[in-house]
Length: 346
Image 1 (cartoon, helix red, strand yellow):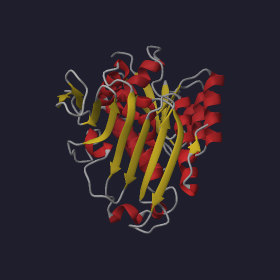
Image 2: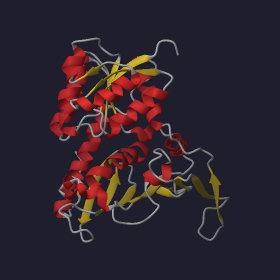
Image 3: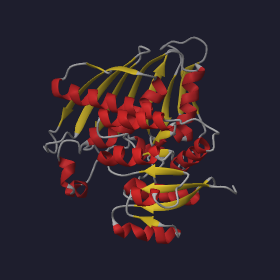
């Protein structure tokens, strides 16, 4: 592609570094500059032979990029994102959209006011496996969706907890691992109306939870149970099954199970289960393996999608409103953990 979209990356932490790698591979984009308060991050700018800036203000006062990826800590999302939207620069904002609902609304308002695109970085939607599952559901092949079961079971080793914030509220699997699953469940099954959650810290006995069960009720009438724990040795989590990140070993298992009146589907190890002829528990059940390769290219797909949005060829797959809704659902989950009661999602 001759005229590549020039993208700046703001915040070179775990995700910022991953975006730099994806930009190197993308055929539609190229790195414009690196922005980070940590001066040591200049090493990345030198590696890519692009300018380095210590702040978004410094970037904006120089040569403006075509788009920006904001991957700074959640509490700074509002400040950084709005500064770029006010400058009419489209933003791909790492999830979650913000650390609270009020700030999230301000970010969305800025996008609307400036008529500038805002995309939220729930990259799982850009996985070919998820695309296939979405088509199966929307086509009616599974019939009316009745229920779903999602597992996020993994074991975090002792080194993980050397960061003391990870043993405090907000540092457990609800705050760290659940956000992607919330967005993906909504994307596949539609709006969530109510949640009910309970947590436990009986294994590690830290202030933060190590295990949680969340029940979701959908506008369609479907129900879903999600169990998440970072203290179970198991192969059942999206990270260990989707093959998106080479840092995780692939287990060739599934973490999502979605059932309908005509059939069911499991993924990332894609299998479609169904009866031939009469639907009955007395009849043999068959399955088709849906031949989709595990994708390690979701971040690249996401960047290419950003380029298409900037070029006017596509609309954002994950909008600011999608990010806000995920945050509202997460807020309702946290409120439910305190009382155990069913909470309506506004």
